[in-house]
Structure formats: C-alpha cells, structure tokens
Length: 169
Image (cartoon, rainbow, N blue to C red; front, side, top):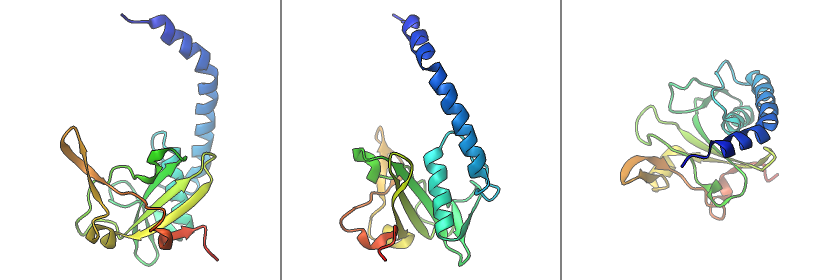
C-alpha cells in the first residue's frame, strides 16, 4: 500500500532546506568553476569536485575532460586519477569504482583525498599506479556476482609514506 501523504509531508517539511541547499550548491559550483580549467563540473558531486581541484592545485596540474581515464595532468606529464571520500564512516578508506587498471591510457598515479565532515582536507595520499597494480592493491569489485570494476583501499598504518598533504615538514 502506498503512503503518498507521508511522502508529501516529508517533502513539504524539507522543501525549504533543500531549496537553500540547492541554491548554495549552485553558488559553490559557480565559484569552483573558476578553478576547473574549463572542465564542466557535472552533477551534484561536491566531494569529487573538491578532490580534483585540491589535487590539481597542490600538484600544479590542470584538469582534463571526462574522455580520459585520469582527472588531471601535471607539467611533468603525470596523469593523476583522484578518488575522494568525506567523513569518518567505516567506508571512507575505500575508493569508488576504478574501471580500468591496465593499458597505455591508464593514469600514472592515484591521488586519494580524505575530507573532514566540513569539507576541509584531512589527508592526501599519492600512489604510483604501476606499483599499486603490481602489488595487487587494486581489488576486483563484484556486484551481484559480476565483475564491475576495481577498488582501492587506503591503509592508514602502512601508507604513511604516501601522504603528501599535510606535509610532514
């Protein structure tokens, strides 16, 4: 049995806050666009946008369009894929989907960005892509028994040497 009244009531209760949130998100997207090197900031992906922009600023790179397997490139030719997570729930150490780990068009590096709940940077790790692949750090991600993609997990203890932000100096 459908309960349309409950849905309508919740929507009415939350409507004003969601309108303010949508307006603020639009303003944030407009301001971040100035740092996006002409790349279109699609969807409603503030966490992802911030990871890419923080990364390209830190490493003096420029964002590339979505036709590439990586998110930005540096002046020295590094092709960097960015995976960003926010908060401290148990899943923050695991990346989202990584569609491909082999091939000439793959990234040269993986940048993992962890944001605090307020969107400030907790830490950033930079890994060599080939080292991750060769050491088996990319794991197959199966959905309902079918290979979907790969995932990566940060190991806070053993990955200390890969932290590039904040710097240790």
